[in-house]
Every structure is written in C-alpha cells, then in structure tokens.
Image (cartoon, rainbow, N blue to C red):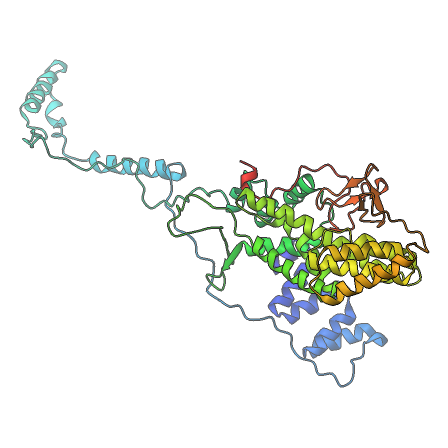
Amino acid sequence: MMKIAEVKNDVMGQFHDALYLGDVHERVKILENAGHLPLAYITASVHGLHDIANRLAVELGDNVPSFPEGKKASLLMPPSPVLCAGDWPLLMVSKGIFEGGLDDAGRGAEEDYEETADADWGEALDIGEVNNMQNGDISMVVEEEDVHEETEGGWDLEDLDLPPDTDTPKTAPNARTSVFVAPNPGMPVSQIWVQRSSLASEHIAAGNFDTAMRLLYRQLGIKNFSPLRSQFMDLHMGSHTYLRALSLAPVISVAVERGWSESASPNVRGPPALVFNFSQLEEKLQAGYKATTAGKFSEALRHFMAILQTIPFIVVESRREVDEVKELIIIVKEYVLGLQMEFKRKELTDNPVRQQELAAYFTHCKLQLPHRRLALLNAMTICYKAQNLSTAAHFARELLETNPAAENQAKKARQVLQAAERNMRDVIPLNYDFRNPFVVCGSTYTPIYRGQKDVTCPYCSTHFVPSQKEKLCTVCELAEVGADASGLVCSPSQIR
C-alpha cells in the first residue's frame, strides 16, 4: 500500500502507511521530502537516528527545534495483527465451458489423433516392387489390397444378448460437480415486514423510519418526532437479535418475529416482535392515577405523557382492543390538560382571578371520580377564599352530588353552602359559566362554548381556538393542530 501511495504521489497516504508499518526511516524521508524539516528532525532524534538528525540540524541552522524537559520518548509501534497467515485463501474453481474448456477438449482430440496416426491401419506399400511396373499394372496391386481388406475382420464388434430390463445410469454429458453455484439471495425479512403493512411500528422495526414518519403524519398528523426518538430506536433494536459467530466475522442480525412457535412454517414470515404492548400502558396509567392522588403532579404528568407518546406504536389484534386504545387516548388527554392548567395556576400567584378560572376549568376535565372530587374541593376552596361565594357554592353542590367517601370533604362542602346562602354573590366576575357547556382550549386555557368555532388535534382530539391552527399541539406535543389525518391504525384488523 505504501508503494502504491508513492506511485500515486499520495504523500498523506504514504505517511499513514509508514505509521501503520512502524517504518521510522520512511517517515523521516517523507517529512524531509515534503519540506517539514523540523518535524523530520524531531522524528529522527526521538527514534535514535542520530546521523540523519545531525544532517538535518546542519540544514536547519539556528531553527533547530528544542525538546520539552522531563519528557521521555518511546517508540510508537502499530498493534500486531491477530492472524499472520500469508495471502488470503482462494477458492479453487474449475474452468467452465467458456473459460478454456473447448481449447482443452480440442487439444485432447489432437493428441488422440496424433497417437493414432501411426497405428496399424494397413500394410505399407512396397514401392520397390512397383518401380518396374507399367502404369496400368499398379491396379493389380490395389485390387489385391482391396481383396485383402475385405477379408480382414476389422473391429469384430458383435451384438450382446443383454436382458431387456437392464438399466444403466445416465450421466449428463456436461456435468461438472466441482463448480460452486451460489444460491440466489432471498428477500430480506425487513422488506417482507413492510410489504403490505400500514402499521408504523412495523415499518420502524424494519428500519424504514422515513416511511413510518409519513404514515404517522398521514394517520395522526404527527410532525414533531423529537420526543419519539427513543421509541423509534427501542422498536428497531428490540425486533432484532444479534449473534457473533467468529471473532473476525461480522455480527449476524436475526429478525425476531411476533408469535413464533416451533410448529410454524419456515417459509412463512410473521410480523415483527414489538417491545411495546397495551398492558404496559395500563400499568403506567395506574402509576399516573396513584401519583395524581398523592399530589405528585410532575410525576403523574410524566406518566401520562409517556402513554401519549407510546400509543402510536401499539399493535393490538381485535376491534375491541382498538376501541380501548382510542379510549385510553381520551382519558390520558384529559389528565394532561388538567395537570397543565394546574401547573399554570400555581405559576400565577399574583393573579387571583386567573387562578379561580383555571381551577374551575380543571373541574370540567373528565377525571376519575376520586380525582374529580379533589378538583372540586380545590376550586371550591379557592373561590371561597376570594369571596366568590356563588361559584364556590356551585362547586360545593357538585362535590356533595358525588357522595364523597371522606367525611371531611362532605363536611367542608356543607359549611361552604351554609356560608354562601347568607350572601350568594361573586365579588370578582369570572370568565366561567357552568350553565353553558364548553370545552377548554389546550393552548390558551380559555372556554370554547357550544356553537363557537374551534379546531382539534388529529391525534389526542384536544380542542383549540381557530388561531392555533397549524401549530403544534401543546397537549400531546406531537401532532399539528387542524391537520387532515385518517385516524389511528393500530391493528391488522383495521386493514383487512
């Protein structure tokens, strides 16, 4: 390689090869020819080539570089190769019919012909006896020879009386068993996975991230894939296992199929095994419920967001499970929206009006009954402290209608009702009308009353005011608000 680099005038490649070979003389020579005399002098001095170093020092004159004190030089040698067995082994393959086979066949035929040219095909003519004959008399000699040839037996090939049922093996005339014919490569498993699949998770498992992104945008309007990076990598890596055969051989990648069994046909490939399943999401949902009950809103929000960002990669089998997945999206979306409003309320310590509004909007999220009671108790307390007794009384009645199991909650609600009956009014007007049904905007946290225009997130179905169209959804943080999407596809039964 170093010689080739020298012929090609590749100075850098020549220097790299000299480093790999540990050839110090060649390195000094290359540096000197390139005009780097200080580097050549340092290399020669460090490696003990004093004659070359002295010659270079004369050429440098006063520009001889100095060495740092206290440093000990050592020879940098390349690592020894694992195997030193000469040239690479070559596969011995016999020549085919188009690689000299006809020449060999013709050469053999000529040799056979030359060997049989001197065979005893007949007697030689005695030319000496014919010399004194007339021209017409030679026919007598030829006729005598013809008679002699007719009486000769020749090869004496006689027919054999073989039985009619004797079978002899047939051999192909051009059979060559020494020639290795490689089999045609089959279709990769990853290509089989994505041939007729509209499930984004199966495309990700096959490594086709671009087609998976297009599917997610077309089905759910997802355009922000940064939060999904870890899910993409987990799906792809989890659907393959890797085997190491030899230390010098590359690692073998083996596809892991979903639902594989020993009785399965080896010619039929199953769908990829996925690392995410619906039962995992149910466990995270229960963890989010538990954290919400304990008031650990940051932990709860983290669990709910993880569920929202994992559902696009879930694959289920039946239509009933598809409905459960869609229902889970609505449940988690309500909790994420409510917790986000609660975080926003705690940030607005100097705005009591906005605090009451956000606490009131939180009660309209579709939460589990224990959590809805806590939201009603919280809104009732905030409004009562702000002297908005009419609104506080409304929340107290809502709380009592849920039949709270905790006696302190019911007792506090009855006390607020008794205090509000003496002065049923609000000191501060709020942008809140519980008599008129509404949904909360996921970005501005304001009510969108029935009959007003709105746009929705195609994935989590959160409602937004029209000004938020084509912006990123602030609830799921994945989809584009108002995008035209076909809907969630999480089961092969939806494609059949």
